Image 1 (cartoon, rainbow, N blue to C red):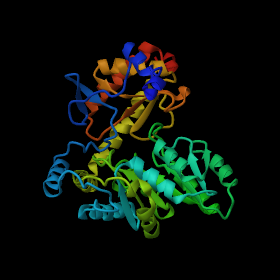
Image 2 (image 1 turned 45 degrees about the vertical axis):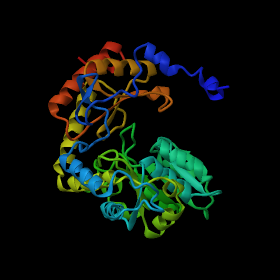
Image 3 (image 1 turned 60 degrees about the horizontal axis):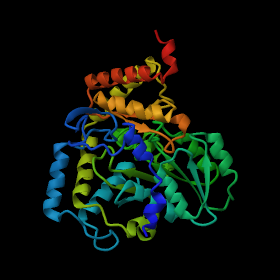
Length: 401
């Protein structure tokens, strides 16, 4: 008897969407992740990538990856804890710690595992985790493994955070965990106020900079650098799959904390380590990011241009202030239809529907890369505005002459 098959045979939502021609996931790309990709033999402008600095096809990064494979092979064949630590892992961790202004750093195989391993190891039973309601799923999963008491506060709402801190026992460990740039909303965390509250209530603070490194801060150093509060943030987490053109993640902090995580974070100890090519790619990407500040400047020039274009057209972009621009539709089915229309028009965007967000926040997630041109952006904006009007999903159009 196929118990699992029988249990889940009624789950046919994907098949229903496929039959309707609006299934938007697992779209096969047959080219590198660049400002234009190939799907079904056609060129498509990519506005759904997290490669904010546009480094995924950079020749120096490819060269570094190839050289690493030639020297070390394709796999470490074990965990960092045992046989999977290479000299280049240690070199990268030293570079990352310096990048974000902390004593030490430790690399995980993915960003998800970095959050999972760190949060579950640092907070135990009868301790407290305070999470923004819009924190990334990896933070949520890490909190569930921690056995700590989880207190969620309203998104970027400092009064709500303080009300939760007041519920905590004063002498217990309290860890606030927030995204630096929120991955769907595109807004930046109110770090100065969180630091103030952290100090007032004797808590610790961890910032997930997955979408902030390469985007904000001095030469892309992230949220703490952006606010000049590096020394006030206890832990800085980052990923390599966005601006740094690879795969993996890291956590940086005081040497005592990193020492504990190296020997207690199960997601590190019991997972195979980052392969050599990925390690070398990240190291090369950091060098390019620091030595080519014009990339970040162009990214922000594009960002301001795109925000103004969408807002002028009457499209609701919420509180976004970064290269992640939510285009709110607030209707799941219309979001899926929009994604289909735009793909047919040669524009790749990400549909975000419930349960990833509430139904009232269903959106098209539009994201920029430093390799985009103004001409590409103009084409995308024009087609998106036309599609929004066609499906009548932006009521404010009626007030635009």
